[in-house]
Image (cartoon, rainbow, N blue to C red):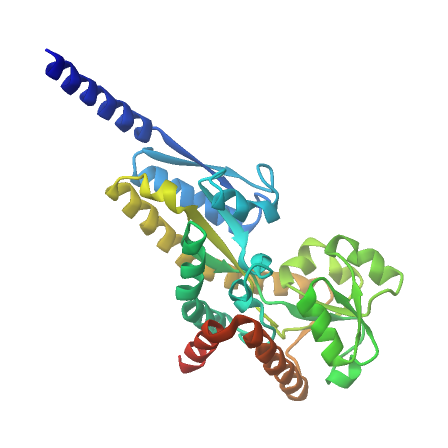
Length: 324
């Protein structure tokens, strides 16, 4: 009788475990608003998983830092507070230089090159995340960081002595190498800084130009595409391992589709934003050959500086990038 009871108890526990998993719900925090194309892609990713698993696994999207602030999301997944989340990779570069590889200025200045860099760096990024208890599901880029200027810029000499907005160590270093004066200004304060003459030029994306109406004060835009930063969607390895094999496969398949879709959407959005900037009176220009060459030289200097902090693993990434 005792043996029968034990068998029945085991069956009940197994059924209970199955029911618990059958109703698995994950929180998916992101720091970006619901209207962001990255967030819209996340919503489709979540929908694909729900459909593929017949709602066996559902993801609840929490946009705009509503569950965790943008700079808290990686840590939340790492510590198991959230099962899955999205964050900008370079935001964690203070932990390890590898996270900042896609933000080395003037290294990968097109979507094609940014994709090559993403492929070259993925094994190292996956390994680093795995050491922190996370699995990389997919990455996707933002439009390139380009040059906005109150006055026309033909060569780096036109930037010497100007006040250049800086918002992180990389942009401060770029200003220094250009002979400009770095001015620390957050994006929300940029309009006021332009109005008061506190800044003459800056690097930011076409998306920022539209969202912050920078075209109202700045009329010169140069498509230098200094770097194309990427967001990453990661899952707690523990949470992923708790899924059965078919559900794991559904998550990975949805992630692959989300990544392929996001790279295309980002490039399309960049072109749309550039057209909107032009329609609002901005002059959109490619950098002159001389300015392009001078910026490339700065990129080489900053790549060498990054390699010093990234070590042998960083060198492997850069070598792999140039071999493609």
